[in-house]
Length: 150
Image (cartoon, rainbow, N blue to C red; front, side, top):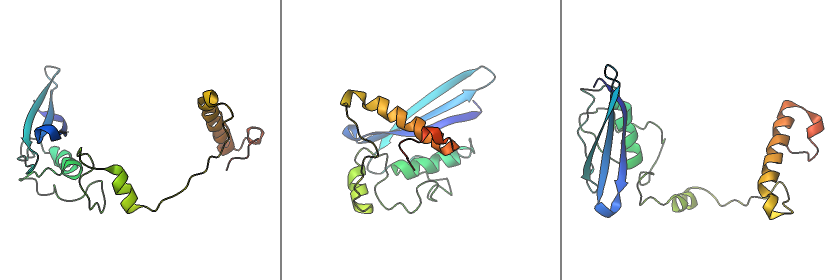
């Protein structure tokens, strides 16, 4: 088992736990092994495995950013990898409210429809037609640009 193929977490708020999921690959035998263990959700901490699997350094950083799990032994787990300047609850926790976060961070915006749907049953067809027209417009094919999307 020389390759760590995957490391992530699953949030189980009803059980007050996170489930850590590790997938290892054995290329000689052609098998993979899935290891799962649960940790406390209130003080989520899992020892780092980078001494055994150096590639885990990025998986652990990702788990820290998205779930708030600490990985003692990984010197870089607290550095932001994906979520720059994130200052809220980790976004993959089940108690994270994306609407409340969006309302707090971004100004409200009104969106207008760029096309009219005359028949609600035909809505999907209209969306497909709009995509075709937009793609043709991007290619510069003027004959398809009859609705003048820009």
